[in-house]
Length: 231
Ligand code: SF4
Image 1 (cartoon, helix red, strand yellow):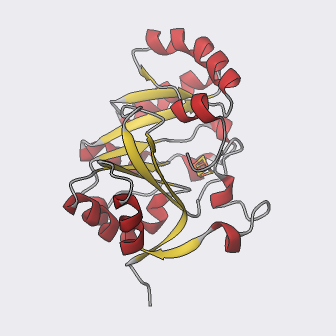
Image 2 (cartoon, protein in one colour; image 1 turned 135 degrees about the vertical axis):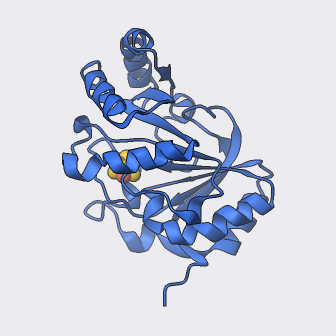
Image 3 (tube, helix red, strand yellow; image 1 turned 60 degrees about the horizontal axis):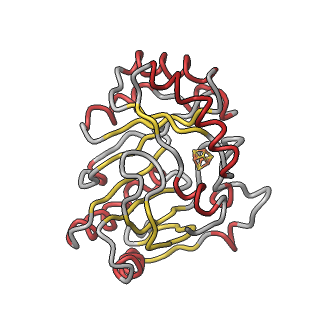
């Protein structure tokens, strides 16, 4: 039988800071869940899903939600970020985690690629950080782009849309998605897993992002720690 009181977890880490998006710099604990339904060429957490390169027996563990909550509690944080992989693959199992966090007074943010629509199990999430993937991610369009799902997140009134861009060429594609799905709260984040690449791409992208009227975010954890895991 499906045990909704446990989650397939890659790592639990913190205290740290949210590294991306509107909450950049907020102190928090992270739960990174295993598995993903996409395969982005530049994915920086391929150890959650790429079993050609990593061993799931080493990388993932089924963990009771109560254990995960205890581990976050020991961090003395006021915010929990649920990330992946793709956390929405375990949506039904998220209810006890999210409600446990709410009972403790924590803000909950959930990070997703926006291919699976939110249901009642994630009603208590305070903010959805939705990161729709572009053609430059290398995923086929029918797997990475689900306008109906993006509209469902938009209709919660709790979603921001954070697009990872590798260069100016990605911005027209973002504009088309924003227009088709009528998204507001648009953020652009340069792709990069080392500080030099991130800074260079930030400088290249910033003027055009400003011109289009969108928000911009860097990646604090990359600036501080590069691509080190678990920080
Ligand atoms: S959706 Fe996220 S976790 Fe999945 S492959 Fe893309 S970047 Fe990696």
